[in-house]
Length: 589
Ligand code: PHE
Image (cartoon, rainbow, N blue to C red; front, side):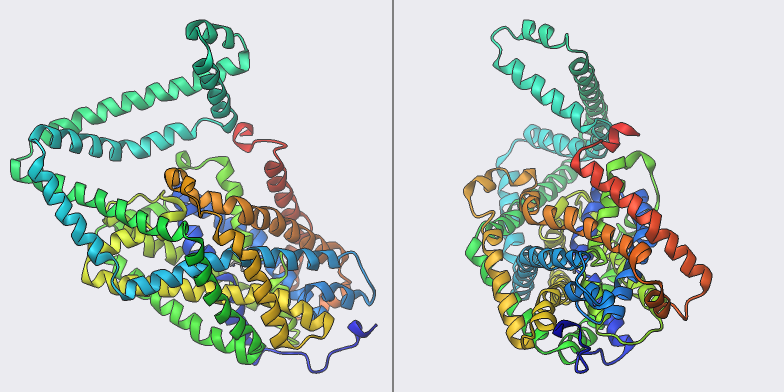
């Protein structure tokens, strides 16, 4: 079989360091800078981070080693690697096939978000926040000039009460399970439709399960109302005691922030809902990625990463340093590092595990492909540890870069997918002149991070054609890149309707994610990771395995074996079962 003859001219990394940078480049991406901070925010910080770190060490690192090991042993990209190891066709190649498909899907939405980061980099260069900020300032002036003192007080009391209530409300509501909330929704709609509402209520509450859900939700609602009342009382006293000048100043600030917020989210929604605009940026981004991949493994990918990765790290360092001098830094550090069990739900644990796959580029053969360009039989442990450490460090630094700014400028950490594209520019607007520079640095680094990940995704798909079908690299890169772009069209246009505008507050980012991201990140990656772990632990020929770990201390090899054989598969299966809905872990614990 021609596919199994050794390819003497197969591409190789120039150096081990180059490989580590490229693999870390694949790992460090939108997952670290865009996704990790907002899921940390939504899951209450500290404890979530701790659990995420445990997932990285117990599942991520061992599977990373497994992927690189298989790639190095097979010297092929994922579809061919298993055949090459066994010297015959094998069903394990299905892992590779799923990887190629997952790569395609992930890339198709990845380039759209990456395109936005390019758009925002350009926007920052032309200082887009300035007109927004000055317009809001004028409108806030107009507001205080035309509004009565009592109305202003009312506005401020409501605003401040909502702000203070928010964390307590989230906490109280987080105690409800999904099915309790769903039951309650059903109950409400049924009652609204009924003619005699009191009677309908009595009739429905005969159902024990429904009754307990309704009671639970109503109890929480009462607690929220009570908390609101308490907070409003003290807020009112405080506001009544303000001098007239202080009152005006606070109203002006609060109003201005509201207005900037409105306009800034408007800016993002404009981009999000303009399919052509999103597509144009995605196409431009794709061209850059195609160029790098077509350039080759060493001359394209490795060279690009050698420049992009240090630049990225320097930019993050700069941003974190800026954050360290902001008033919100202390709050940010304690948010990210002090565990508070009351703020985490069990399903957050599962999210941490799922994200460990995505952020380390595991489960779809990216690391396998990069590993296959290495012929060295040593350093597997050190390389995997380095890549994992870099990825983890940058995810944590991203939190330390984003949260001090959001905390210092009155933003919520729980803003969701819009955190990066809405809350950050908001803060930059407030910072003023330096804000523009920070904004350029921030979106520039987001673009770089996305690029080094996108090239690894493209490489998985392109290398299939190169390795298995003997295509030239340039032809493979261009073809797969353009095909991905075609798949990206529906994604770019997925929010291009006015209906989204009306409910953007309800997390339209999720809307976009619901389609492609869920399929690939929540299903294909964990499933791929499960099979890779099983293969590496139970199926891979011992002889080849041992050749890859010769320089590894025996006890580490044994620990690794237990992790890929038992621990990682068991945990992934639990996650998948939860996703299928076999059980709801929040109800379970
Ligand atoms: N690891 C990348 C990130 O964190 C995403 C990615 C997933 C890249 C899978 C390649 C393969 O953004």
